Image (cartoon, rainbow over all chains, first blue to last red; front, side, top):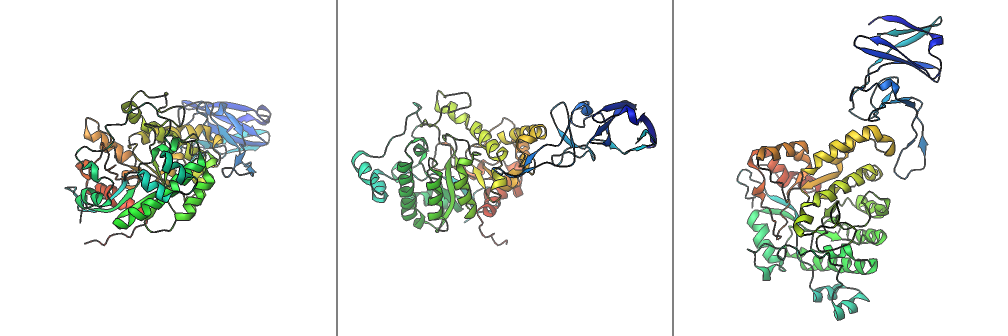
Length: 117
Length: 361
């Protein structure tokens, strides 16, 4: 693992996803609500291009028949195939015991986006 | 007295024993008006027939039919013969599942419960009763649970699992679940479809032609009811609720759990109140009973299924005595091993019914 400059900041505006090759696969860089995320574009469930899925903050009702709704701050990445969900920052499955999505540290400095991969 | 399983020296806890329904005269003696007069004059109401003939009277032909209404005969032919510690009397009252009048069904349930409490339970301390409640009226059903919970030898609440009109995950049933949870009484789901029409379909495909077809398809109901209970969040709403799925076998469960878990991971937002994978609710809330145990050509396949369903914790023995498809305790494959057989015949049910553990030798 090493920090590598991959994109100019202007190449990944809000809501955009950009990809770069990483070994036999690729890594997607996503900017969502101002924050950058870097994710291996390979779903651990069935190998789908997970970065092409929806980034969302799904609304929950905490109890059956309950009235209160909860919207988590943390965004989720929902795979385009089978719709498995992952915490976009940590890669953790939102279902207990599910496989984890591979994520990478990412930072932005002086107009450049760096990924530790 | 200990059980007759050649591998295991353990008493038996039997989760499904069918004492007969009260006779017309017995029912009249316990019914409240106006139904006492009605039944005395006209007899019990009949449910709408499915047009399907039950199997040969329903009972084992080697038993003394004339004595099947005698608790002493059950003691002799079942409890003493096999070494029962506990036999859950689940009755033979399936036709009430298909009756449309909630007040009538409520009266019949109350009368039957009182009859069994007076006629059957005092006959042997090993008898326990699964009380009948009118699913047509959940508030009345909850009142019946309140009335009898805590009475001696009351051990479960009986639900007919295959002829109800509304799936069990529906909040229509919440009053009953709340009462069962409050009194720590498990629900005993038992098939009811056979001779009774209460809903549109006796199988997932539609109306069965024969008892054979209907009976073979019983697991379909358990698959649907289990999915309904879990995916509608019943066990989140009622974390103390416990259910027994009786007479549906066990082999259907792995398929359902795998499918629920896989699809939940993608469609989780449709059951947002679940805190665990669907399969993870089973160990805390669901028990299967053995009879009628599946019979694959190779016993090893059945052993694999026992392993898949975590049988040491989720499976309990049921004989279905005195019905035609009765299973002796020895029906369990020896290759399950002594520990698993002991848990199925006794230990898991001992925990489930909050019985004291037996002193070990």
